[in-house]
Amino acid sequence: MTTNSKILEKIKKCLALAGSSNPHEAETAWRQARKLMEAHKLEMLDVQASEVNTTSSYAGKRPPVWLLSLAQACAKAFSCSLITRSSVHGSQVVFIGTGNASEFCEYAFTVLQTQLKFARTGYVATLSRCKLATKRRRGEIFAENWVSAVYSTVARFAQVDPETTALIEAYFQKNLSEISTYKLEPKKVTNKDRSAAYAGYKAGQSAKLHRAMGQDQRMGISHG
Image 1 (cartoon, rainbow, N blue to C red):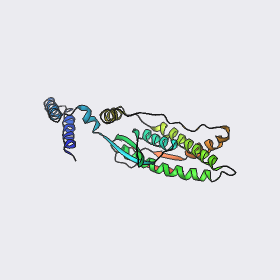
Image 2: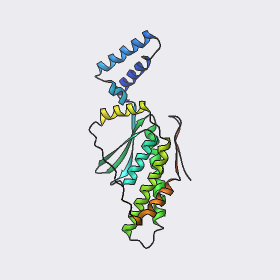
Image 3: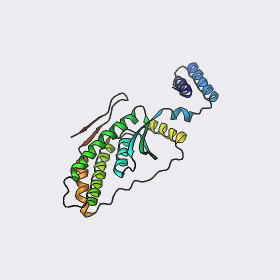
Image 4: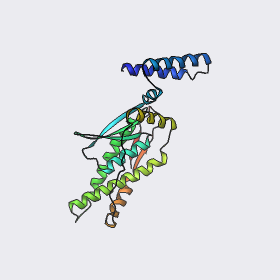
């Protein structure tokens, strides 16, 4: 643990005591917290941002829309935010959350990605009398709609925690204030592609996420 981290932990303990029902104890703790922040040039934003953790996962050199959409679905399921990072070595999806949420996201992303790749390979193998380019296109459409089904499932049980949202916003203000955003553009589905879209959505409905009830519980994922 770095010196700065140790100081932040001391400040957080003081702030916790500042909520004491004992007026004298609360005031003393608040003064100590302020004293530590002033001495180390820290703000409340630093304290809030320190509650946030990140976990990253490799996404390839040019991640397809379906892969980034899957990462978004996992982030939504566990009240996290998502960013991507690119370098000469490839891209990463980074899950940003509190407690163990970012780890749950990374685990879900890895398992669901494996399931999706298996389902997509199986679907493409059923295509006959198609050019290679057509197979690739329909495989992408299958995958995008598989993720859409998972996202629809996630949306039904995803929870919004105002406190978690505030902490993540503090993290962004402190560390990612100038980050840019962009909109994912899925492939346009033509009449000839509708069977691929339907097959993908139907297959994706069998992928299930089970949200952990507590921070120390491992999230379970099943496919059936």
